[in-house]
Amino acid sequence: MPDTKIQFLIDNLQENLEVEVKNWLNGLAGNGDKASLAKEIIALANSGGGYIFIGFDDAGADLPEVEPQENEKEAFTQDNISSIVHRYINPPCQCRVELVSRTDSDMEHPVIIVPGNHRTPLFAASGGPNGELDSGKVYIRRPGGNSEQARNQDDWEKLLDRLVKARQSDMLSAIREVVDPSSHILAVEESSLEDWHNESLELWNGIIEGFEDDDPRRLESGYWTVSFKIEPFATNSLNELNTALDREMPTHSGWPPFTYLHRDPVRPRAHDRTISAYIGALRDDEQPEQRTDYADYWRVSRDGYGFMLRPMREDSAGYASNVVPRPQPPLFDWTMPIYRMTEILKHIEALSKRFGNDQSTFQLQIMYTNTQGRRLYQSNIRYILESGAMCNVPNISNQIEANVSDIATNLEELVFSILAPVYEQFDFKELPRQLVANVVNDALRYPN
Image (tube, rainbow, N blue to C red; front, side, top):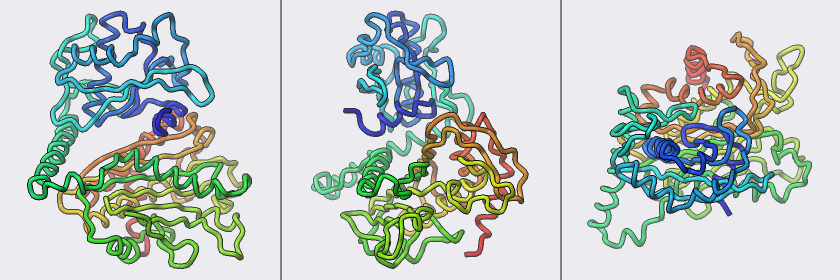
C-alpha cells in the first residue's frame, strides 16, 4: 500500500515544486527519454526532493491517464532507474520506485521517489542526444512545475542554503554522538514534515470517524491545513511549551491560529511529546451546527512541529452577509488567506524566539481541500478585485522554507511566496503584491 502522501498526490495530481508528471517516455527505450527523466530527478533532488508520476498525458491541464504500450510500464524498475541515475547524474542519488493507482482506477503507475537533503548539488554527468540534458549543468524546480537550469542569484542562494542546512544537520548529529555516544539510541527519531502532516490528518479523521454522516463538523465541503517545522527547537518540558502557547503567542485577530481555550471539552491535552486541542468538541448543551465554524484541530510538538486544520470560513452562514445580493457558494476569499498566513508566520516567529535561536529555519506547508468549482470572491468592500475566476483542481497545496529571521524583515514576500501558486489555480489569477502588502499591514495593526 502506498503511503497517504503519495495516494493523496496521485488522486489530486498537479505539477508543482515537488511533483512532476510524465507520460510513459516510450518505455525508456531511447537515450533522449532517459536524459529527460534524469533532468527531472536532478531538479527535484536539488529542490528538496519530490515525486515523478509516470503514465499520464502531460500535455494538458487535466493530466488524464494513458494506457501503456507493450513493455512500457515494465521498464520502470528499480534497477533501470538506478542505471539512469548512475549514467546521467553526479553525484548519483538513491531513488525509490513504487507502483500506485488512483482510488477510482485499476491502472498502476510507477512513481519515482526522489530524495532531498543532499550535501552537494547534483548536476548532469552526461548530456542528452537532442539537448534534453546539458552536461555539467545544475537543474532546479521552479513554481508551476518546471525544471530548469539554475541561472540567477536567487536560484543559487536557495540551493546553497538548502545544502548548508543538510551539512549542519550532519554536523550536529556527529557532535551529539561525540558528546554523548548514547544519544543516537536515546534521541527521538525525526520525522519529515509530510509524515507529521499525514499523522495529524489521521488523528483528526479518527476524531470525526465517530460522528454521524450528516454532522457538519466532518467538513465535507472543505477545510484548510497548515503544517510547519522549526529547527533547531528545544523545550525543557511539555509544561513550558504549554505555558508559552497559552500566554505568549501573538494575537492579530479575534480568532487566532492555534486558539487556546480553557474550558472542557475543548481545552488542550497532553499526548506523549505533543499538545493538541479539538475546538469542535461539544458540551452537553450544544448541537454540532453550533461548532461548525470553530471546529479547529491543532497540534504542537516539543520537536518543533505544528499542525492546524480549520474550516473554510467562506462556507459559513455568516460569510459575505454584508453583501447584497449574497454570492452563490462555493467561494474562495481574496484576502482571508493573506490574513491567516500572516498570523501563522508571526506564530512561528514567536515560537522560534522562545524555543529556537537566531539561526532557526522553518518549513511551512499549506493545503486547501475541495477547491474544485470554488470561485474567487471579495467580501471586504475596501478592495475592488475581480471575482468569478474558478478553480479546476480538487485540492491545492504549496510549501516554502526560510530562515525565521526573514519573518521580521520580509514578511510580505513570504506571504506572497506561499499563496501566489494557490491563486494561480483560479484561472491563472495573479496575486497582487500591493494587496498582500495592504492586508499584511492590516493584520499587524489589528487590535491586539
